[in-house]
Length: 366
Ligand SMILES: Cc1cc2nc3c(=O)[nH]c(=O)nc-3n(C[C@H](O)[C@H](O)[C@H](O)COP(=O)(O)OP(=O)(O)OC[C@H]3O[C@@H](n4cnc5c(N)ncnc54)[C@H](O)[C@@H]3O)c2cc1C
Image 1 (cartoon, protein in one colour):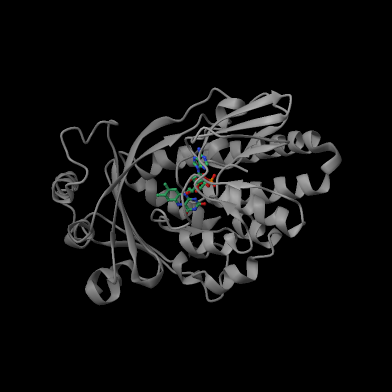
Image 2: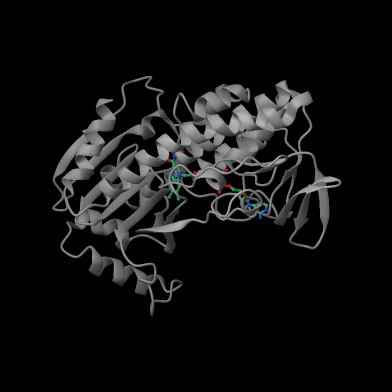
């Protein structure tokens, strides 16, 4: 297994539960080597199902925040357009911090940290050869690439590469929001607040411990920040405030009071990305089907990890057939979600902000 993200760790946890050997190769030198990122909502029939297969659902329920499903939508002038709160006991999509999910999945696993993979060569005499960034090599019977958007395993099965969607996120964050920014804490509530304007939006999401992630999203060429030093927070802030000029103060305060800014251009793989099956190598999660971040990528990644692990554990004698059948299922399901999320991104960051509101109403009504 290459990659210790949601896909790789779920795959390894389910194999571990079936007493099946697995090696997890992760590039990061340690679990906390970089900030783990924001919060994830895990759907009952996707991420939560995967955790159930891993025997970790009860732990998830103990940590997750069902109240984090709340969502408030504002007009750019500050008018509240929607104020949706989950019913008591609603467990369809509870939120969990990525770091908490990672630690929960790591549990009993023995991950090999600091083992960045450079290349994978299938069909050698010894099996599938993994070449490491540090120059080492090791052979395996099956290599599963769960190494994310810029997968180093993917070239062994496919020539596809991610392309830019035309939409960029710039992320900032607020700490101790309840004590340091009580007005923004009230605005954000228990879950998220979103403001949609013409071709841009601002979303703030509560994480645990009073931490809030704020995402400015807008259509822009990939080099929109040319001439802007990304490390110069005040310059980026001034640029963003000019971009969102005229919006009501509570929305702009999310940018005014945020800390450092992180640039996240949104890339996707072609919708319905598939490949000719290659014995001994497959892909999971973002490595297989990178799609816009509309709340499903980690969910799919985890369910795929769990399903592939179950297939491998159930068919040690015919590993290749098990992987082949799994790929067909993964491609069909991921293809449907990729179409929905690509269309969803068009509506969320749209010339007509009522598109985003209509999308929200459709999702809540479904
Ligand atoms: C802002 C944002 C918000 C999102 N919100 C949600 C949400 O609410 N719900 C949801 O379901 N999805 C969400 N997503 C999508 C989700 O983050 C991804 O789909 C998910 O993380 C994919 O999991 P993965 O395991 O396939 O890949 P990753 O999470 O990218 O993990 C890949 C792992 O592989 C490691 N790695 C990379 N290269 C190598 C290498 N060469 N050798 C060894 N290891 C390597 C990385 O260090 C990493 O640990 C969001 C995405 C973004 C950007």
